[in-house]
Length: 558
Image (cartoon, rainbow, N blue to C red; front, side, top):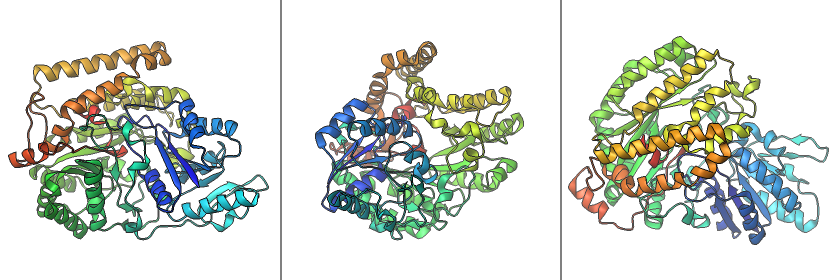
């Protein structure tokens, strides 16, 4: 069968190729199906709905698949309606993170079948079922109850809810993603672009943080082997020229043995001299000095910690407790190991007040002795969590066209200005003073982070940062007059900003070290590392991950 998979724009500030869509595409391709993936998240090129329809028309698929996330839902729903109008008999299926808690919403937007959770074990039976139904001339959903994990409208017009969910127990069975199936050329122009694809080697979460959709996952932690991780990283380097990969597991360091095995594979292969990688992990995970030294030698560039809150009261409210002493101990060890780190901070909860916000600001300011990369975010309520389901103002907030206009604006890229719009949505009906405090705290840590990759700010760097902020402020002013006018004026500037920043600094910052002064001077772990990496002219970086936050262009400017 011919299968067209689309991943609509999420307006991320970084170009991110879809890992989940890539897995499904690879499984289908390896089974003999003809697959085309259009990932509409490139900074360089965004396809209009009419352009996507034209590609669908030319490919003439038997099945149309959507990979839906919460930020992209509004765009998928608009496209699915257009597809239904032009191709009324074309089956539309959907999967993705958003369906965990919002599959009923998805089905109300012209989607025939929703794959509610993991799709590896159900995608081939589903496609075979669709082919058989077409051949026999019977309704698409007839007999569909034989496949677990699916939601759809039954013959009585009511939603059939999945009762069981097929789970992939051995993550080593996940195929290495074939990005040749993607519109890869839209993501790479000069070869210094940072992180275009992530690597995920863990699933499930034993923790119960109140704001996280991982509560939907099975409670145990499933992990692929170190060899599987290494094989994926090696393939990214050899096939796509990657020199940096973001490993986006939410607790990479949970099992020390696996970490050690992966590091030894990187070192013994010599790949540690050609690539760098980033990780995320819990502050409670084993992070002793020997492990950190080994990670550094293996090529670790950045470790991200999801602290979220530091005050005891707030930690208890979000069910994410950790002692301040433990936090300081781990961050000190990471700093002493000369590994860069980022810290996540999350505000905007229903329980927040002027007092909690000021206390969190005071405590997170203490973290500046370890890193300037304090990623402050405002809570985005996720379907299926109490912060979404229990608050009417949060329902389908991401389908608000006005918020989507903010997300696409240029000032949303410069210092992530879209977060302030989240505060204005005021999901939990805070007093105006608290809403303004959200913005104040968020703005404070954005100012701290802005320009962090340029510790020695030469005249050239100061000029570049000044120009960047000028256009960000101008974008905001024009947006207040007309969002459409702002988009028409600045839509190309995002690509230019990203191109210039990554062309000048992409490889230097993410692989060799921070920028010292001008584009011709770089810092490396060693001169031999510099010679090795710079001598590999075909090294091409390809991707990062949404939780590690902004595009390199944003990171460079931040």
